[in-house]
Image (tube, rainbow, N blue to C red; front, top):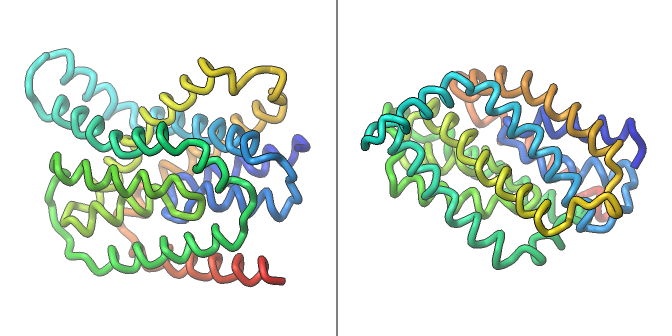
Length: 263
């Protein structure tokens, strides 16, 4: 992979991570358009690195929330911050279990199957369309909600299913406030990404023999910078705008991807 390709894919990741349009799906489409012939395992490694960059950008954007959560935890009481952390832990369970038990099967989907990505983008479009018709409420995410949202996050491990789109849509369909749903969605993925990176390091998947750290570094930097901008902008956009616009976008891209795969 050339340096400019790594930067381009990093920007794609950073801009689409916080939009309900599937960053992993766009990365797979981007690599297919660029003619990337990387094997699925290496392709997944590059994808994980870019997700790691946007996880850091999430922490920067939500730094005030993170300090409040940390302060609440240090009080060692069953307060709102402690409950929020426990809910994050509950939401992680489905994705963690599926990631451990079906890791190889998941990696096989990251091989440039344009038709599959297109079909999953259409599924994302349907989810967003349904969520857009949910009633506006001020309800907070409950423990049961957290687990169900976690199941949606696990399904979104497939390229083309938007993680933020699936989790926000599920949360909204459960009757939760859109702003609270977006905040929970963006923060719930951070522990999973850091856990995945730690697992890859310990297992040797990020070894120098199989990785080009120049392209990985450029992709990381591009995703981090783009993520800072996109996260700040898109949180407000998700709160104020209709999800149907994202639904239309995913539908159009999904249909085009399927048509291109046949051509």
